[in-house]
Image (cartoon, rainbow, N blue to C red):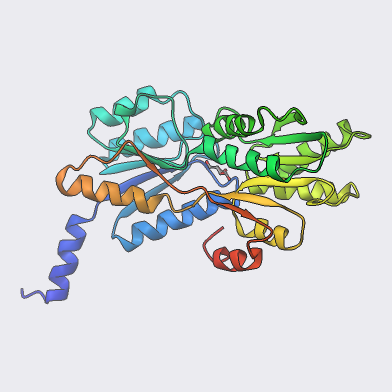
Amino acid sequence: TLLTSAAITACAFAASAQTVGFSQIGSESGWRAAETTLTRQQAEERGIDLRFSDAQQRQENQIAAIRSFVAQGVDAILLAPVVATGWDSVLEEAKEAEIPVVLLDRRVDSSDDLYLTAVGSDLVHEGSVAGQWLVDNKPEGTCRVVELQGTTGSSPAIDRATGFRNAIEGNADIEIVRSQTGDFTRTGGKEVMESFLQAEAGNEICALYAHNDDMALGAIQAIKEAGMDPGDDILIVSIDAVPDIFQAMADGDANATVELTPNMAGPAFDALEAYWADGTEPEKFIQTESKLYTQSDDPMAEYEARKDLGY
Ligand code: AHR
């Protein structure tokens, strides 16, 4: 039988399509949703067959997904690890099966010879940028700060806490008075902020530092419901740069955010494609940018630029 050239091209493409398993954490935040959307888009554009697994925030689900990807014999695995510890055995299994693993956005405590590369931001630096913004913008006098931490045991929660503390160190008039996890969710941020406001009734809170925008957005709601003015009575600084935080900035309800690009898959697939082509080993860490945005950066333009990206 004669095949048209288009059919031959399609057959060749199908035969060469690489299969990648993606163990995603879940859908706790707008940022996470955008990362998932962009990973699917990037895979489709490159003709990669993406097998997606949603771990619903549970490490045991991620470990099971990785084992299943290994059993399926995929060509690579993308892992966004919910927490930093407890990955050695399953990463060794993938290595044994000669399946390269690329970490997305979060880090693990395991030895770096157990994965091909990690794509992500400098999470300590993000916290420092947020802290430095507060140092530069706090009102005169003592500034009592409350902190909404990310998921306990996750690398961004650990590192963003460290970076912020590094930046405010030496400023005796900035004090973190309360710190608790809001699990990176909007509802978590709202609930914990409500409890902070109750516990601090009668004491002035000068600023909120939230490890992501979704928790800040929940907290903004709680502050409004308590009859205060977020962005003014309580300064708000957070991380991610999701569209809704730009809307909040435009409304004067939030003050600053540090951008984390949701396009981790682009650099990850670039590295994998080079590796598949001729075994090129990427750097162990492929760093994405961490840019600060404030109310003076035309927040509505930033909102418009991001609103259709799957957040
Ligand atoms: O690991 C990145 C963090 O995870 C994002 O900042 C947060 O929104 C997400 O849940």
